[in-house]
Every structure is written in structure tokens, then in C-alpha cells.
Length: 153
Image 1 (cartoon, rainbow, N blue to C red):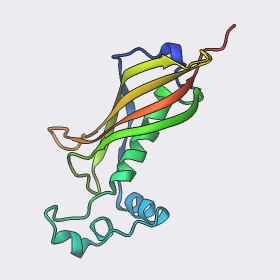
Image 2 (image 1 turned 45 degrees about the horizontal axis):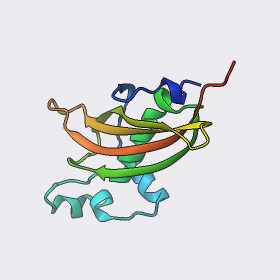
Image 3 (image 1 turned 120 degrees about the horizontal axis):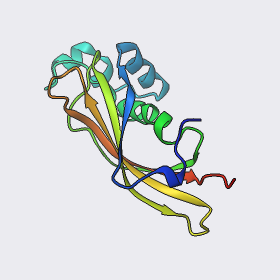
């Protein structure tokens, strides 16, 4: 277990997630297949070549899901009760096959539950494309989790 208990989160702290991921065509294809999303912008090279992007885009929900997965070890691995919400999702720049992403989480809010037995933590998750020298933001969202409190000793 590597996640943080409620008490260990500090509002304002930014958590850099060390693990990065290069997104392959197979990743995008598998995600689209599993979710039955057959949008040609993600899957059809000829169709995508005729768009403003000029090539296929990685499914934005895959980018978001991958980002959540990359955050788990340093945030909620073994300390989560449940994810409560994902809000304010944005995809300001495209992700293409072969792009490598990194993720950071900033704790924006925390509060105890009404019974005081658990905590609610909200984090702003930001995803950046690292194979571009400018490291543009490609996805951002707020993730709210119900977190365990430290066991009393």
C-alpha cells in the first residue's frame, strides 16, 4: 500500500507522479474496442487525415483514465473507500499515438465526513505531453475521493 490516508493530504500540495506512459496505437484501439467507441477520428487514419488534426487522436477518455491510473500509487492505493466524482474535465490539446504523458495532482480541498470517520479529498489532476518541448497541458480534471483515516494505533 502506497497511498495516503486522509490526514496525510495537505491542501495546496502538488504530487508529481513519477511513472509516465507512451500511448500506443494498440492502447487507443483496445480502449475504443472495450468501450464500443468507434469514432473514426480515433480509429480511421484516412478519415482523420481530412480533419484539422491531420491524424488520429487518442480517445480523450483513455487519456483521462490513464491519468487516474498513474496517480493511484501516490494518492489512494489501499487508502480509498471510493471515487466520488470527476468534474471539470478539459482536453485543451490533442494526444496522438506515440505521445508520452506525465501527471501531477494538486490537493485543492479536504474535509471530514459528517460522522468524522473518513475524509473527502479533492485533487486537480493535470496531464502533460512530455515529448513536446513546451509540455502542453492535454487533460485536466478534478477528482474527489472518499479516503480512509489513519488507523488508530
